Image (cartoon, rainbow, N blue to C red):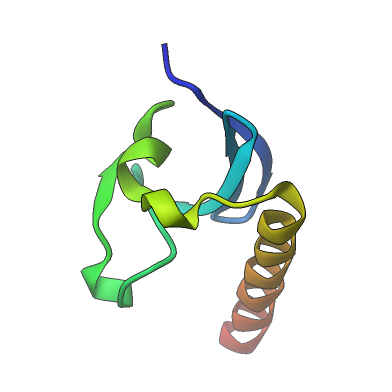
Amino acid sequence: MPNVRTVSEHGSFRLVERDGLYAVIEARNGQVYGLHGDEGDRAGAPDRPDAAEAVVAPGDWSAEDDARRRFEEMTARGEDLARNIW
C-alpha cells in the first residue's frame, strides 16, 4: 500500500504527503512529474497512488509549510500562464 496521499490539488499541481514530509508534483496526460529538471527532461511515472515516490527526489520532501508555499507559488504561476495564453 502506498505511503503517499494527496493533500491538495489545483490545476495540474498536487501537494502530497508521505510520512510527515511534503512535496509538490505535477500531473499531466496520465503521468506525474517532480518539479526539478527541464520541462522536457523531467522523469515521469504513470499517474498512480505510488507515483510520487518515483518522481520526487529524496531531498525534495520538506516540511509542510515549505511545501505549501511552493504549491501556492506553482499554482499562481500556472494561473498567470493560463491567463496569458487565453
